Length: 93
Image (cartoon, rainbow, N blue to C red; front, side, top):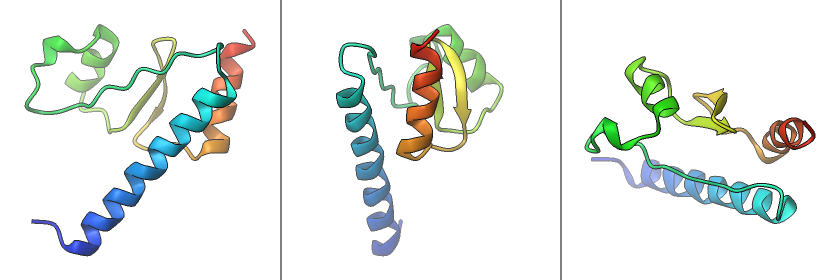
């Protein structure tokens, strides 16, 4: 069982990630579509898209960030400014 401090840190991290995603959706409204998948060991792997499934089988570190089906970040959730730069690279092409 997690300590209250650990649980609070996790809660804050999840709130910050959600805030980052919401800010990106607002800033790039009409230019991007955000899809979020919760990866769980309890979910059957065949329920994931192929590009995700391939990485799960290779023991890739979570979280995984994809843009247009291409892995752009593994093992970390980028802060807002870094995430924005990733998105900008793909919407300009």
